[in-house]
Image 1: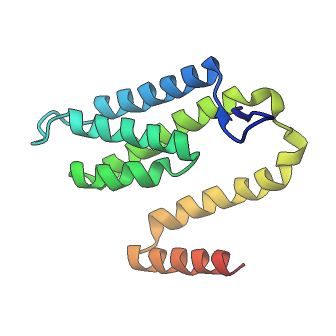
Image 2: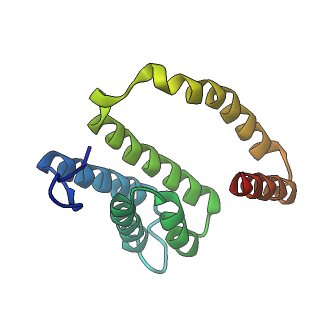
Image 3: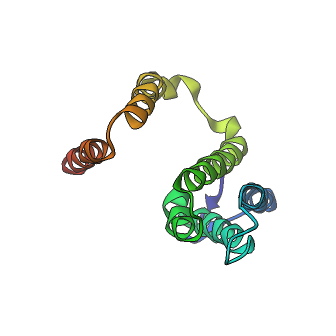
Length: 151
C-alpha cells in the first residue's frame, strides 16, 4: 500500500505499486478496446483513451473510476449496457489489483461485519435493478443516498 513518509506528508509510491497501477490501466484499456465497436465515428481509440484517463485519474484520487469512466463513455458509445459492462469489468480489474497489492494486511475477521450484509444486499440490489422500472429505481436510489448523506 502506498505510504506517507515520516518526514513529509507526500505519498511515496514504490516501483511495485507503479507496476500494479500500470497493469490495472492496461487491463482496463485492453478490455475497453476489445469491447468497442470499430464502426464508431470517433474511432476505437477514444473509448480506450477515456478508460486510460479515468483509470489514471482514479488511481491518483483513490476512488471514482466508474464515475469518471462513465462521464466519458456514455458520450462516446451508443449502447449504455455496453458502457456499464466495460465500467464494471474494468473496475473489478482495478480493484482486484489493488486488493492483491495489500493482501498481506487484510484482516478477514474485521471484514465480516461488512461481508455478511453485502452477501444479502448484492442479490437484492441486482434483482431490484433488473425488475423495477427505471423511475422507481432512481427514486429509491435518491432517497437512499439522501438518507446516507443525512446520516
